[in-house]
Amino acid sequence: MVAVYIGSHTCVQLLQNGHDVVILDNLCNSKRSVLPVIERLGGKHPTFVEGDIRNEALITEILHDHAIDTVIHFAGLKAVGESVARPLELL
Image (cartoon, rainbow, N blue to C red; front, side):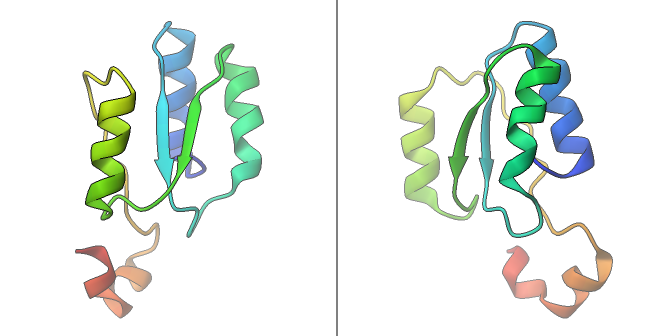
């Protein structure tokens, strides 16, 4: 979720409004380098977990380790062409 436009802006707004943010991203179409920018603009450090939303054990671990009360799901490839070319990777 992190380095794509909508995800990063959402994180900044949530942090600016005092929320704790846990970011899960596999970095397939984003960059880790945006994390310091999110922290600087948001005024607070987000927790970052590198991983895949399809990894059920990882999701269970994240939910166990953090007091998560809301999930915003932005996972997906950013170009329609990628989604059409590799549809099974999106399941």
